[in-house]
Image (cartoon, rainbow, N blue to C red; front, top):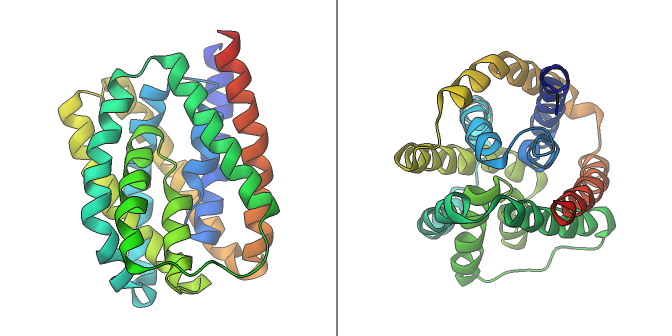
Length: 245
């Protein structure tokens, strides 16, 4: 894609993703990563978004720390760290077309889930932290879209909307710091990635600020359904792109 289009579209995508993050406490990568993957390779997109997520999560986590569901978070932590190590290997070694196709399938499936879901959450046992943490950690490293599985666990363990909004940034603090270390070891932080993150940092900050101001004005359920619709479209487009290359 021409550089001019990337320079125009990438900041708009990042801004929109972090507005959603400010409203819900999650969703920035669910929106931004699939859309940015149309502009630049995933191996550049994901390390860039990880750096932005780290700063955004620390900011949101400090602001909402009183509402964190610490017990559920500590149950997930060791398993998601192991899963993240596996996800780095997927990101480094899986071919680009396979990465796009796998991301498209995941995003499309979760888009359908979020767009159509209704009714009370299914109650989950404490041991479910192991499989959910492993899979979510791997998906977080490979595609930066592990948020839905973390929300599935928190909801299933009885967390309310405010606790989810407070706990998700804390989860992201740990996952992003761990991924930064793993990505650095894997050599994924190229000069281009670092420059892109620095340029997009003010855009991310503005998006989070706007989302935090808008939080009380929007129903979380309606925002999630909008996210679902965006995911269906972006997931399907990624699958078509992977099949056409």
